[in-house]
Image (tube, rainbow, N blue to C red; front, side, top):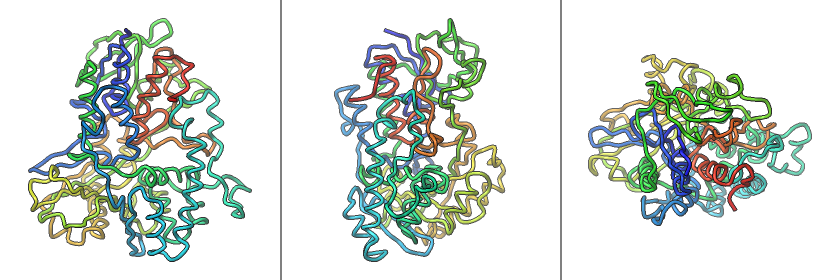
Length: 499
């Protein structure tokens, strides 16, 4: 039985802790904050409740597998999973509205033909068919296996070229080029928005990012009754059932190194914690770099990615009931997605942004049936690039999000009781992520520029879990790190992924 210290109590860290405990190790989690769950927080006021992080779960099989492998009670016995249908409603810049059914490619194609004209569904199905090929080529190395030692091979673009397009004659295409040439018109925005929502600029990411909408359409969109925080609570309780210990309010200052391997943690209060193995479930740069060869990530390894964009969120308490037939998730598109992606990540976006409006049909989110809780959010530059402690900046962004949200909620202003905001500075304070950055999922292509560090760090006894390591950010990807890190620790460096 090894002593394992886990830094952070985010979803990837807890998934790793539960699996390691089942494998017979003594696991202790050290969390800087006063609660577990990382980005899956919950904000409550006056009987209203809001998720502070992801509002939906895609690829629930990751957490089903976690619960199967760590106990007798399956996921569905621990949380109430609800399929969201329609999966999403898009309100395009030209005023077009389109609601896409959940996990039904044929249904989506029929809707697109109806809204955009005959042939639109076939073009969309063609793009997703090529995305499926990219998924089949990269699923194991990107999601189910530790990062290969020759990880550079993942720099090749897996998205197949459309015959006659000429896209691959000069260079591999970006997602924006695929959207424009294979779909065109307003339909192109449906392919770009899933990347934009994850903090990826469609004109800068490889065509393999088409995997993101493919995953949504194939595996569906799911909500957890009681809010997504309930999923974090279920994983936390599973950890406790497996005798994982949690130490909250424990800021980790650095990873201790003895005899060339990780040997424990130094806490902010000066306490030293001995451990045989350390798992870093937080952003690894500030914590891990000093322990590696003079503070530098060694050559030949994928270094930690610099902090990316964050999210600006507005919680809305509304008077009046949630109307029947209301869509759970609506995406209100910016007038210019390309301009938004160029500016929103690097500075102040002065136009109306692309916003996601979440309106769950969940009595636990509101004081009674005569009220409604709504969450509106948009991707934005992190703290540091902009000063999100500036009240005037916060006020401007709040108004831009509210203006955009009125396209989905025309009576928003009349129904508004109160609103609260969550800025990138608030995200940084709550999660510890530098600048409040939200990690993006790993992607193949672009010379491997969109990979994250391997789960086995270049220091014996040190491993990385969570969204800042392979295979990147997002609830499914973070959960996958649990199986990868556990396999590497239990089976050793010859572990080649789940079978």
